[in-house]
Each structure stands twice: as structure tokens, then as C-alpha cells.
Image 1 (cartoon, rainbow, N blue to C red):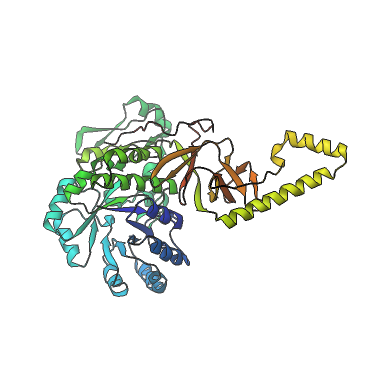
Image 2: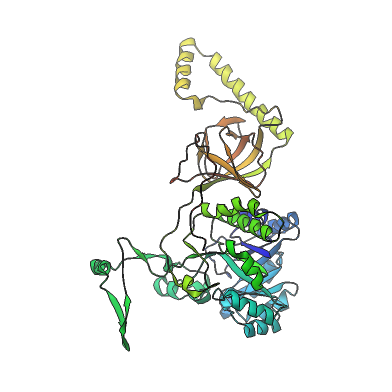
Length: 489
């Protein structure tokens, strides 16, 4: 089975490919149902083209899944030249009016029907096949039994189904709640996720908590619909998150060709860890690795924040009808990403900078009057971070790596490295180097250039994670793994 992962920006796209996706879906400008995702702009098509060269065989899908008004089609047509610059393999659309537009202007790109079209039966799939669609992303209301029936009826049609991520409480995502409460239409890409909000009944709170409050319908007066609120605010229509990682064999038997992960607005850490978990699960299912080898990666799904897990409509609608409140906190936080290792020449230049700065510092200190020098030495004893310490890499290890900081890390922070084929390597001896000075720095912060100094066998595009605030974030903590919690059923 193919694995399709989400990407809300360039970095997530790279990490989705790196961590095991066969295909990645993105949104372009204002024609995607995730307007609040970064999406793709300006000349980013150049970087994406290069990425596809680095990952031969990987596919790029573009979501054009809004409901198009006339002005939206006009806007799209006015930017055809820009869209053609992207190496798009397939367009994901729900609006049938876009079919001839795309077929005319992108003859080499396949058409995938969006789940927003709520295609859930064999006759509809057959009809879309006659229109030229290569693939249908089935509505999430489709059961495994129905999927098997559809595949048997239209075997030549590729079927893609969601396997993991947030579920929309409305029918195939056709929600009006956001537009009603905030004026921001989900069908135009501006969903404000009002179904997840926590509400209170205000002055009637005591009555709501008593369990005595209920609704009746005019012609069904014997039927009572309870309205109950606990101690805290209540989510009105918040559905469980979908998690089918333990049921991929059933999905394959049902005829699913492609598994899809939801989450273009999720973090880079979520994209990487979730993609990796499903990659390993598929590889185990198809006997490329053992179930034992896959298990630690699948357990990592519980170390990214999520709501209570369920199986959606695949087995019965009862599970999909159960709402949930809040979400679990993650054991870890994304702290930084690791870039390319420095070459021997680059490393030598960094070490040279540090040695020169350290020598200049010592010369200035030695040139001071003895009393001034003594005062300075006392100050440095109280504030050792003021004293430059040159980085020196003389052997094979430690090595220097480009490091993109996304959160603050200091020398006391518990740090762990994770990669596409590594669940976690703790490091208690890491250091960070300022590339401008060639000296060690006691901490790193977001959006500044640093170098990682470590003797651990890390690689480019690995992730540095730290303990979340709710967990023990001390560097002295060395237990790399925690027992996963949560319900995968």
C-alpha cells in the first residue's frame, strides 16, 4: 500500500519524504481547504523540484479541494503559469467544474477525487472513473465492507482512505458550523474548528450539571435528549482522532490502495513521527521488516499529542459517533532539526576562529593591571559563560552539524535524537557552537544559526527533541523511552 503524508510547508514536505512517505499532499495559495497552513508561494516550486530529484519515485499531490465560485476559477486560470512550475503528479479536487479545467491545462497530471466529495458507493466511483479520475479518496463514512464491495465493482479505480488523524464531525467535512459561528467557511478553507471549542451553558450551569436538563422534539415528546455538563467546559461535537495503525491488514484486504495521514496544519514533529510509524507498520505488513522491528516506531504515535483514538466508521458508526474532550499531552517537544555535517575544511575553519578568539581573550586579560585582572578573574569565576571556550574537533568524533533551533535548549536540557530508522538516542555530552565565533555557547534559541557538537551517530534531517514541560526535562534523566498510553481501538 502507498503512504500519503501531509505537508503544510517546505520543511514538512522534506521531512515527510525523509521519514517514509511515498507521496505528499500540499496546498497552493488560496485554493486549499487548509488556508491557515503555510501552503506554498512564490518561487518555492524550485526547492520542491530539487526535493523530488533527491527523492526519486516520490510523488507530489496538490489539494485544490475548495468549493469554487466563478471568481475562484478566474483566479486560478490567471495563475496557470505559476502552477505549472510545480512538479505536480496529481490534483485532489472535489468541485466537478474543475475537471475540464485541469484536464485541459494539466494533461499529464492525474485527477484524485477529494474526500470532500463524499463519494461512498460503487456507482459514484464508477461514474468518477468515466470522468477521467484515476483515484477516489473515499468519504470517511465508508466502512471496510463497503470499500471491498466498491473495489470489486470498479477494480481499476485506485482507492485512497484516511488511516490517521483528526476526524471532522460533519459529513465528509462539509461543515457549516464554523461559517455560522465565526463567518469563516470551512468549505472555503477557513475552518475555525468550532466543533473542538469548549462551551459552557452559562447561568444554567448548575442545572446542566444536575442531569435534569434535556431537550424534546415537538412530535417526539416521549424522546428525551439529555444536555449534561460536568465540572469543566464541554466540547460539543469534538470527534475522536482516527488511528488504524493496528488494522492495516484489514484495510489492505478491503482493497485500499493508499493510506492517507491527516494533518497539513500539524507540526513537523507530528508529520515525521506519524509518517515514520505508518511506514514501519506497512513495511511489517508487507514483510520487509518484522513486527518486532516495527513496534517501537508505532509506539511513538503516543508521544505526539492527539485526542482519544478510534477507528471511525470502518467497523461500525457507533465508534465514530462517540465524541471526546481535550487531547493528550506529548512526552516530547521538538527542539531543533539537524542539518548537514560540516566538512573537514569547514570544521577546521570553525576551530581556527575559536582558537583565535580564545587567544585574543587571554592576551587582553594578560595585558591588564594585576588588580584589574584579579577583579576580572573573580567576575569570570562567578559568570563562566563570559569566558570563550574554543571548539576543537581533531578526530573522527565529535562532529559538527548544522542545527536549526526551534526552541531554547541549554546544556542542562535532556536531549534525544530521532531519525527515520532510530527511535531515540539520548545525549548527555552534547554542546552547541556559535559559527560566528567558533566557541561553545551555553544555550541556543529559536531562529538563530548554531552548530551541534556531538559524538553520537546522528544524520542530516534527524530531529532533536526534549522532554515536554509535563515530563522530566532534566539532562540527568537518561531513560529514553516511556511506556505508551492511549487506546488504539
